[in-house]
Length: 196
Image (tube, rainbow, N blue to C red; front, side):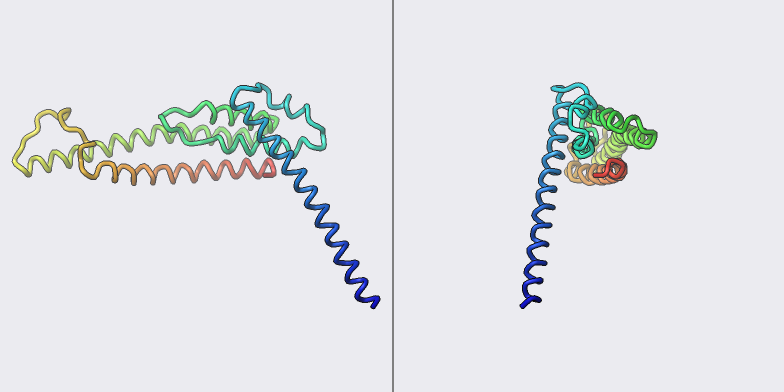
């Protein structure tokens, strides 16, 4: 009977520990979410100083809040859509530097990230131009095979080619995949430095 009671006691103790851990996890998640909200306010311009926001928090909570802030910053570093790096990506890089205390390690990775984002736009434009020239050449050849002559290249539009969208989508997806992988690797390194 004593053996049964000690097993019950052990189960109850374990349940109490699990309940305490769950409470700690919930509190930690709340702090993480608060950090994410503060960083979002910073990115939308509602707040201007991340460090000031962080310093207003209790010293025991600052590491977790800082992690939430960093998580939001990392999520907002994206490949450019319209040829230029978005303001949010640039602001996120600056915010990460501020949160790291201008750590040389984080600074180096953020510089690499910014270079990757800049190179992406240039590389995408080059590939698009080469792709358009290739399609234009195919169009000319096809018209010549049909017995037509084309004196004015401007009269031909490469987007008129039947497979233009499909082929460009493939080429674009491949380029995006390569650059997203490079960006994700750097973001992962930064996340590790922030403990997230």
